[in-house]
Length: 342
Image: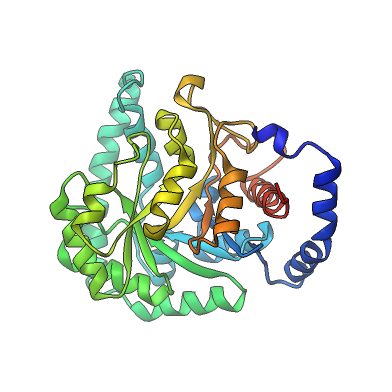
């Protein structure tokens, strides 16, 4: 269905012709230095994780990548923002996370070298956590507000913040710091992986409500249509950070039906194209997998859902390209979907 949706046809050509002025306006705005990725009323954003392969991982670089790819809204992860604010230590959470995924049920066991790497990363992470907590205790929140203004001046809004401060092992002071930093950045929700204990859901929900935020929980291949039910019931500030690609890959679930049922509690939604479990669950260039990206975007458009759709670039970078160019391709895919009437 994904490949067929954008096959050239008279109907598609007419739909695109009818929106040529709108698309041209968006591109002229981008050329003038202010990107525009709100399309047909649907806000398309990007998570900074999409740019993980780029050489510069600073907050300033992330802003440049947004502008170069044409995206005007972002889910900002902790490292770029905290680096801008002066945090003296860094840690490659993505590398550790990839090794953790390799330990998931159904995956081949870790090789001896991967096991050694994981043990080393765990030691490094413990030291990072200690140093980060010490810095966060007196972190200058004005720097987060300055970053918000710098992004806003370039036409990019920060709608979500994902720092490493919302785990059960983080102190109450770190949780509060993460919420205050999110507010300073202008975010309306924070994102974190879904906890296994409801006590942590209630703890984060109370902290988020105190600061006028929501906590949106992300999922991977543990997804089921009922995965969030207990968390949503446990705290009013609980929300869903739905990853549509993972959701479909987890068990051939109907992502569109889930969106219709839970749209009021979805704070943001990650977009990627994955194959279903029956087809191997691979991450693929958009239009080659089983995720109903185009249909989901049109549902958002037609039902006027307010939450943003976040590009999460995860397939392999093609030869001769880079993450910024691929995010721009993903955005163009969204544009074609949303300017099509079918």
